[in-house]
Length: 102
Length: 158
Image (cartoon, rainbow over all chains, first blue to last red; front, side, top):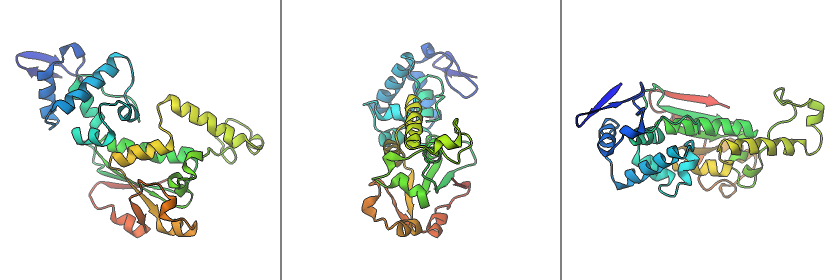
């Protein structure tokens, strides 16, 4: 799959996740967020930055990791990305779909 | 929102084996993470998982558990259950599986409702103060069935 944002073509997996984080920028985030019906605020970008850092450090994401992240608590996390928080947050952040069951 | 036709998962947890408790909690958390509603009804020995004094000491069954990698006769020896439970908890910790008390916090914060069964609470002579602070209430099974109020609700007994 592909996504066109401001004249650039972004490669996506069949699930709609970016295949390469280097293609990610704020405009891409906004375009995907729109599809996910999430209106991005500074609080969202703090979470996005955190999940990207985790990904770059090779840490697999789980709900427990979010809890101890220091940038967001579980309640806020669900409120920021309603209806599938970790899936939406990772998709908007341009990193692969999380593989953990927890 | 999840594309799944499952919109709400209701779990009835009737056992206190740590593996059963985790099964309910992982599935409930997994549902919430997919945008699916989730609720757990704790009944009979499942109440141990929300009883303050007990929830940190749940055990894996070493006797009567054919999947346990040890002969049943050994499983009955003193300390064996505690040892096996400790080993299992260690392995779970490696997978970033939260301990039961932390899992309850996560579930509650994620919007998963936690209910105690009225009949079992009465039978074990428990009071609300004995149960976790996150508890949403004590319900009869009839009240719990009423929670199945939307199309795409599933009820699972563990």
